[in-house]
Length: 209
Image (cartoon, rainbow, N blue to C red):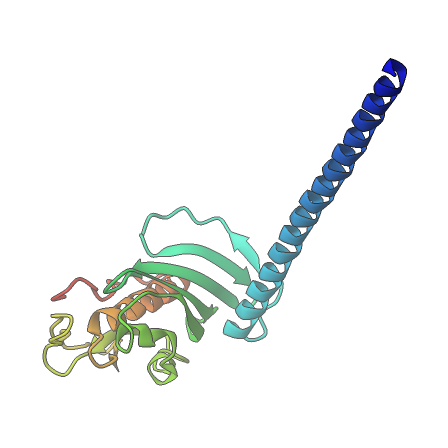
């Protein structure tokens, strides 16, 4: 009886070891798969990012990320191609930070821009994500941009911009979203100034500015 009980015990332990080994093997496989999928996800994200940059800077190829250490508070990264740059900018909007990618050719002309991230007020400031008419005002130009407001913006408490000079282009802001509109202009101005070397004071985004 004792021998039989010992054999059954050893058999049970053997089954437990086999079960544990199977579970451990499955866990290793799942972990390896997860890491592999993360790699694929990162690769796909990189490909999408490159494709987006090529769209923002037509004919731009073989982008190289440049070291950028200036503390201007707006430009976060710079990618260079033979015919220009795609510049990532971040600035404060009405509700939160606004992140944009802006294509600028070697002559300082804006070739494309897109708002990557914004959490502005729905139906107002958040239109900077979708308002192609507003965003198109910045295309194919290289001067400093200011936002034109018709009187004061009662929603954001922002007031009229100052009179523009001959080197500035006045753009109509999104109705009820002067602060968000100025944030876009500030990002574009910073990107153009990086390429042209201009000493430009971008439009303020503070309320009342």
